[in-house]
Image 1 (cartoon, rainbow, N blue to C red):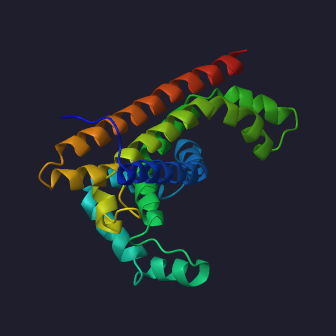
Image 2 (cartoon, rainbow, N blue to C red):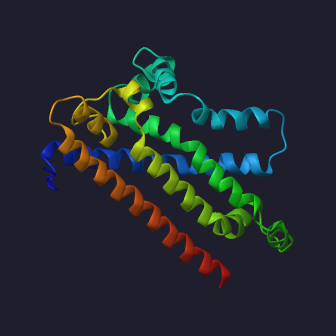
Amino acid sequence: MFDAGLTADEWIAVRLSAQVAFVAMAASVPLAVGTAFLLARGRFWGRAALDALVHLPLILPPVVTGYLLLLSFGRNGLLGAFFADYFGLVFAFRWTGAALACAIMGFPLMVRAIRLSIEAVDRKLEHAASTLGAKPAMVFATVTLPLILPGVLAGAVLSFAKAMGEFGATITFVSNIPGETQTLPSAIYAYTQVPGGDAGAMRLTLISIVISVSALLLSEVLARRVARRIAA
């Protein structure tokens, strides 16, 4: 019979998933804005290659992405050894690695949402600010960024929702360690592998749905408020 109450281990998985998803989203926003701006406005050699690289995680099987992360950011990987030796930051089999995997998997969705917003900006507004003496950085901060803010919010929420549901790359890169790397999808998978785990899997599935839907609704509300303020 379904029990709505979560166990201590299940609450840990919920909190860890929210932590991993938030860190992945927050760390991706600045890079996603810059990348989207380059793809939307840039005219340079290698632009098509950059576009393909950004969207590669959407094409590759998640397990392949996780394996490449393990090779690159593992303790013996080039990047993994660099971060461990110089910054004391370890990714493999840690929650930080789960955040990295989720950030990479959600990055294309965030970049695409922001890029569409940038392409929809009326360039005349930016040119008007420039003719009034504003520097490019000031034009971006006072004109472009407020106009693309709904797209940034939409991309951030898409990235958060993707991170909450990420499984293949995460479990390949950081395994499924309770209390350390076991996120909601990993905990649900663990429940499906043991007899009598259906109730626990159902509890966590419902929690995952509630969190994802709430994030999407919050994004819609924030985007509408920002749009109304810009229009005013």
